[in-house]
Image (cartoon, rainbow, N blue to C red; front, side):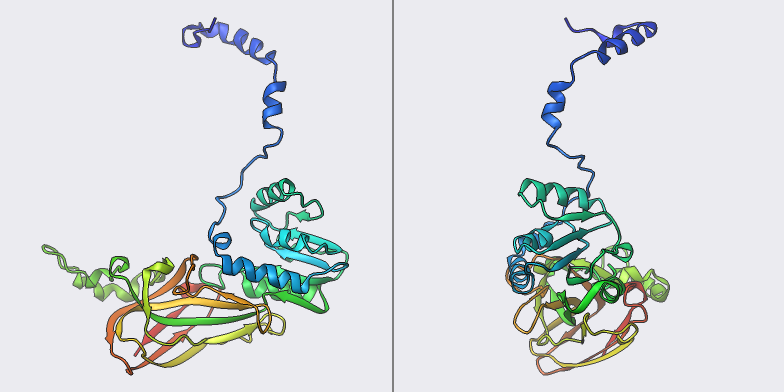
Length: 330
């Protein structure tokens, strides 16, 4: 017979608690024994859905990871790279992550029978294995490419951990700033460019220079891009195996010729990551099956015709902080 707890007198509540303590717990424990404390953030789906990206990692790992090697997966995330590496049976394999993602990655690895991965809860800057590392795996790339610590974290890990002749996978990155036209339904004009029947916001343009710099950036979906106006060309390239700290450009001047007439809504920031001369993947929004969000550096809308010259000036005082960037299109 069920007790009506709401009708119990306050003084009898202690007796109910005492009875509950003696209820059998083993059946419940049995049900939950195989379930971890899933305190992890929502997993990122895009890297797994992008088959070109996964295939590139798998082929690179099969090409460069072998027995007797020591491998470190930097910021393992969902653990996919570490599990792909485990299939190659390296001598030692570390999956390093300071976030709560490590719990989920470890559980998935266990459920898939990968028992030889050593999961380490640490930031890579504080990780020091007893042996030198032959391969550093990573995808230390943020929404603004550099805002997840790509340069400082990987250069530090390279200098401290990597054995002579060791590899960083991927190591070479082409960085693009491409003028794009968005699909009409994806456009969000600056507030001073919007025209409503009853209110004119154009007066707000005078405040442009006082606005939070974040106002001039947007994360967009790949399908939001209708077309690139120019043939994509890297603005600059970096190689994590040879790059020296402080060697990246602080200012860029890009000159292009418009190949596809249209309206420029902003500069699309994306990258191509290389494992070697033949293996790569990219976040080009117009690529079939592209699914990773990309950053849009918003500009005033402007119409271009084919063969029009287009010049972009960029100031990048702190690559890791996109709010310090400034850009101008002429």
